[in-house]
Length: 166
Image (cartoon, rainbow, N blue to C red; front, top):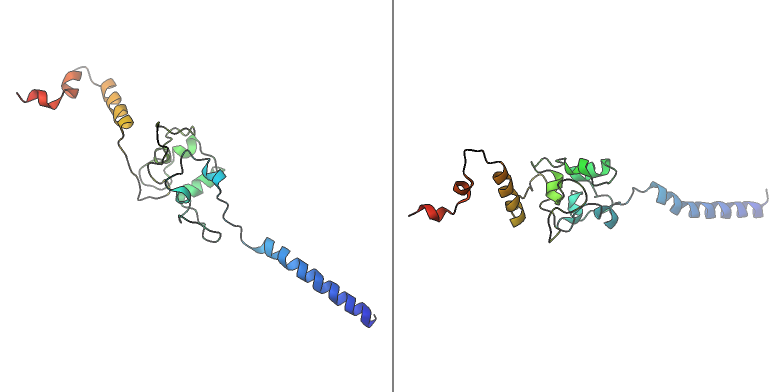
């Protein structure tokens, strides 16, 4: 092989290596965080806790995007919000995911009219806020009114307390 041929071969090999380096880096680096607004929008609400609904960090980045219990369950459920996920308690805080995200039956519709904000974080086991709103208090009263035994008088149970102080 002539000196000129060796020189061409060396230049070709160098060009090939230089071109292959960025491609190999592309395939060998870890995947970036895949959470997107599209994934968040699949939940009934994500306004208050945003990324922290699914991630252990409120601002996840590639390399630090670990999922919390809810994020794991959401991922295992093919990133679909449904009845199955709503009836789970992913963070072990005694509140079902559906309650925490404001869609108790998992139909994708927020349970209450007005502001569409999570009750609490379905991925944080220390957070189970049970807010008593006018709507929830009304539901509680409906249950008690419909379940009164025959021997209780509705008027006695729901009478104004000041009436008895005469």
